[in-house]
Length: 119
Image (cartoon, rainbow, N blue to C red; front, side, top):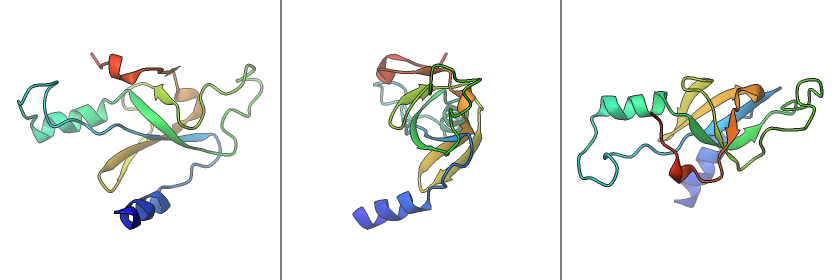
């Protein structure tokens, strides 16, 4: 298992410039705590319309523009952040979906993502 995990980590693209790499959460197969299984189309929509994710990479120029980010970075590695649905370049590595987006696409840092849901 660890060899597979290491290989996936190596395969992740490295963000360049002012880009940030976001890992999307795994979409649940069921609705809430029920046993009702989602259709593949519904799970696909959940991915496309995702509004939160984990910061797993940052380009060398992310948040370096002092004119735009006077108070410093809006987020850091390991933060769960919120962004607009459909933001960034979407791709998968293994079974996990990622987004590559601009540093100014981050709209909030989320302290407890379990309390937030998309409407």
